[in-house]
Length: 383
Image 1 (cartoon, rainbow, N blue to C red):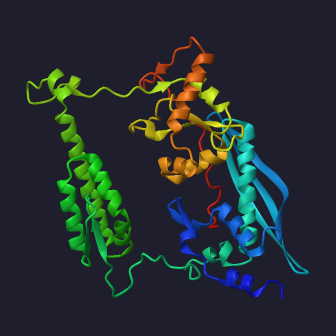
Image 2 (tube, rainbow, N blue to C red):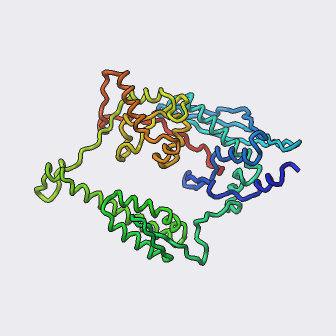
């Protein structure tokens, strides 16, 4: 027998839904497993010293310059060798990867690594569901179901959590939504509204999973957004600074009533300095200047000021943008306050570059300095 009974059981077991990621490409929803997870599963099932992989003949199919960036496509073949007793099993996989960066060496490096990861996943998928074989089935019958899915003929318990922590349970989705909206109308600040949403976000996902609850869930979200707009408008209109400095004479606020915009400094020399530093997380080079998006309020397609930047390597820069929750990502990397690091780089940069003053970004007269775009999936094939 090639594998032990325990290994065979793990390879035949259903793929757990929580490990499956999804993305949308060209209007089509694709399911896949992340590369690090597939490698971790191989270590768990086969053993750290009982398998290895070999990258064979990587090939660059084309490379071109587009909008000042190098774009290239690579393909490669990866051979996975698994040892079990006296038996050796060899499987090959073929993968492709796209790289894009302002620096040619980074673009080629990203493309090669992406192709290698893609080929590794395809080779390991031939061993069983744990490595993503179940995702090639359109029905995904060998993928476990989400525990939050409603069962036919049953009504789940929907719990509303108030700001004080009090819980109210409902089995009727309509009653649940009415209670959520009632509490939303009672909150006094925008921060309290976001807190209320965070407390009940998990239950909202349960509601959205039901075919009959999805429309109701969207209605709740739309109403909460309207409430957020009203709270923001009320806060601006009640601002004592605005009332004292900009009296309203004709029933309409004059143009000077508008609150001053946050300054968004653009300093190319500082961005180049930050990019020359080692990655803040792993210490690798080269790095890219990452803008801390939570440092300033969101604006119309504008990045935050260049003073709020830290160096990240391509891998961690990509991971951060894919995480969707930047503060949580920094916390997971045990970096409690990246703004302090950004302030340090800003001080060091301007000590070296005196007396070159930074300039405030004006969207009418200047072009914003963009970070190198992150790599995107290269193919439409479900992984």
